[in-house]
Each structure stands twice: as structure tokens, then as C-alpha cells.
Amino acid sequence: MICRAMRSSTGEPHQIHGQRPQWRRRRLTLAFAAAIVTPLTAPAPAQAADCPRKDTLGTSRLLKVDAATFPRVGLKSFPETLPLQDKEVVLTFDDGPWPPTTTRILQALAQECVHATFFLIGKSASEHPGLVRRIAAEGHTIGHHTWSHRSLLRIPAKDATAEIDRGIAADEKALHGIATTPPSTPFFRFPGFESTPETLDLLQGRGIVVFGADFWASDWDEMTPKQELDLLIKRLKIARKGIILLHDSKARTAAMLPAFLRYLRDNDYHVVHVVPKEPAVDIGRTP
Ligand SMILES: [Zn+2]
Image 1 (tube, rainbow, N blue to C red):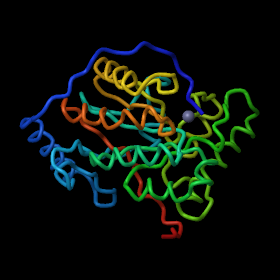
Image 2 (image 1 turned 120 degrees about the horizontal axis):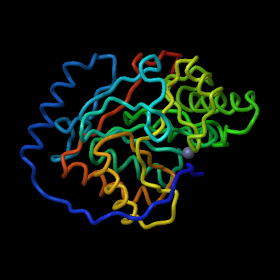
Image 3 (image 1 turned 90 degrees about the vertical axis):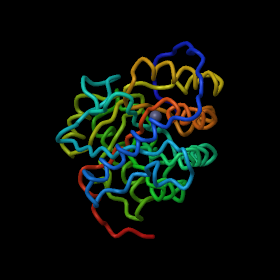
Image 4 (image 1 turned 120 degrees about the vertical axis):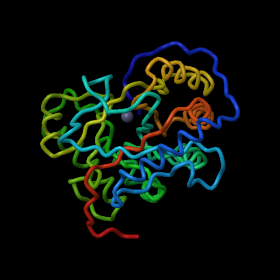
């Protein structure tokens, strides 16, 4: 299952460099600043200074997002995006959970102490609830991506609503054991970015943030992990910041992610972790 998007050529070669003492000072400063402004109700970011391994990328700060301030974000689909600084990126993964590759993605993120956002397909979540709980337990944000990844573009409104609600309920059931339609994390991404005015209004009315993306790796296209890495870096150099769309269901993405995270680390990029503005409602979670 893939997200619709344009095809593009591969990018220029990249280089990975070694030590960066200035980078470490700056990151620690950012980490300290984030600790001051981040209330204790939010999950703690996995900052480089807290990582059990030295010289990791880490998560530089949390960004709280709510629909009142940011109803729709991502320049590929909408006029606005998240308020990121230069060389700040948000990592997002769609179409999981898919055990063979999602686990490799989680391992790569953990290795660099980085937190991301996963937009889950409800049917897959219902089939792999343990993996859903693992994603959450490792500190990542869980968003929603419908029940079956069906396009919502040309189906009756009631069917589109059912796809959205069934997906959210399945994700919540996997997470907490209770199939609620108000999501504990009100983040949603349309399959293929195929929104309609009606579905956008529906989500905004429920206080659910719609995530597009600012750029992507086109990992639905046939290419090697090295080609994907080069293409992603090429686009990153142009955009300099933004919400990055990847797919944890793709083996090529799982294969290239460690090198991409090292590239971010070695070139002074910063990973921002998006979280809900309001703490998740306690709905009787099971362990
Ligand atoms: Zn998708």
C-alpha cells in the first residue's frame, strides 16, 4: 500500500563526516532549552545527552500540535506547515505496522535515540497489536491512516467517515484495549493525501490535525536503498527543513534509514518530535 506521489530522479552523492564538537554544544543547548519549556505532562524527548550511546542524533525538542492552531500541515497539500526552524525535521512513517520492516525502523530510531510519528493502518494494527504497543512504548507518536488505506476521494461521505472511524478505533483497541473513536492522539493522514472538503471539515470539527508532508523519499517507487538515500538527501538539501514522509512498510526505507539518520547527525540537522498539545485521556489502559 503506497501513497500517491510524483516520481523523481535520484540525487547527488552524499558524504558522511566525523566529529563535530560545535554540533554537540548546540544540541545540548537546544536540549536544555527544550527541557525548560516542556511541561512534565509531555513524554520526555530522547535527547542526545540522555542516550546510552555516545554521539547519537537524539531528539532535539518536542513540538506540541493541536487542531486549533495547526488544523492542516504539510506544504505538499496545504498552504501551511509546522513552525520548524532551519535544519529541523519531523520524521513520519506511514502504512505500518508491518512486522518485518517496522521492527527494523524501530531499531534504527532507537539506535540514534530519535522519536518519530507513525500513521497506522487500522487493519494492520488489529493484526499486530503487540507491535503497535511497542511503537508507543518506545516513545513514538501514533497517528491514524484509516482502516484499510482505501482512497477517500470518490466514495460516499458515510463510507469515508466509516473508514476513518474504524481505523482510529482499531488503533486505539490495539493500544489500550478499548476501541474508541476519539483518538488518544488526534493526528491523521489521508491515504495518498486524498482529502476532500467534507472529510477535512469532519476532522477539523473533531479537533484532529491533518498531516500532509513537506517532502518525501518516493519510497513507493522501485529503487535501491542507496538511491532512496541519495534522493532524500537531495530533497532535504533543497527544503532544508520540514515534515518528511517515509513508509515503515518498505524494506528499502528500513535499509536506508540508519545511513539517513547518520547523515542528519553528521550534518547538524535536528529531529523534532510532534506530540498532542493536550495529554492523552486516560481511558483505562491495559499494560
Ligand atoms: Zn499510506
